[in-house]
Image 1 (cartoon, rainbow, N blue to C red):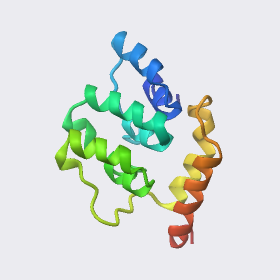
Image 2: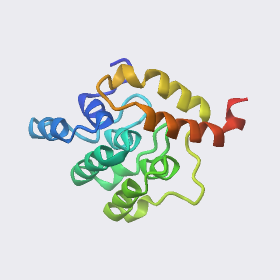
Image 3: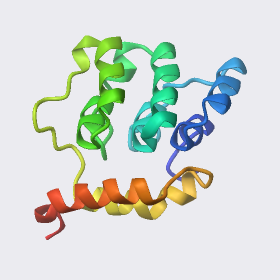
Image 4: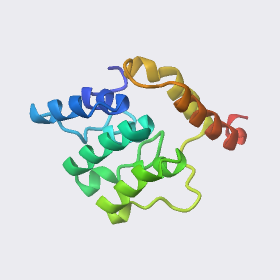
Length: 151
């Protein structure tokens, strides 16, 4: 797409392990970064919940530490994003797979403006994702924490 997202990004955002497995089986890289350096791992964190966790687990088995530590322009590292999105199970997966990936205490890698942008385009790059009430609630929590970033 125009942001450089791949089918792996879309599959991870939707929490579709089946699609990720099919892509991987057919030679797709699960570590490819888009134009903002976001990877499918970032997308799995954004998906959250059990589907995001299952996607993250598959991705972590297929990528290098260097890929796991890549800092997205929008989100920072996937570990920092997982801490910020209150996804402890995904954060644990990342830090166990790559011990150097710990998010610093109080990590704040995404601003309210970036979250608003993401919420606006999410349906466009992951139309089948579960961007529903749970994701909207997480977004509201993050926005309330970053009230200063919106001014």
